[in-house]
Length: 191
Image (tube, rainbow, N blue to C red):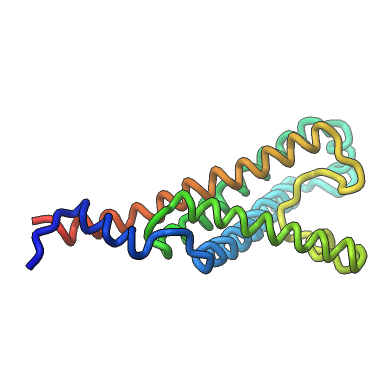
């Protein structure tokens, strides 16, 4: 029987099975996307429930929104960042847990899947026309409140903040997902 300590065993396993796992990252991206859709629907439903519970009609909501556009924009932006952070944390966790090693890299790979798919969808939308732009025609996905036709400084800042929030969430989730396996290894190899 070999006399190996936990660190040696984990190092050997990482050498043999480490690296970025594209499949794990893809399923992490699917998890992040699904979580983002569910959280967006939950927040929209909560907003609607508050409006119904308080007896607020559509015209008064429209008037309040136009009077407080700055506040609503900031609150919506913060809500979007929280949704992206949580959704990509979940996606990174799935990828880190599935891949076992390199949790931070798995999180980055989840984020890269999102970037690649967004680029593909944008290119397909440019080639085929706006009627085939799935993301623009589906209101279920969280969107950065930026008009695609005009990108301002505020829009660029919102875009960068959203990308950073998603990346940070995915990396933290990947590290957390990987930690589970370290606990299992520690329990299995302790005396």
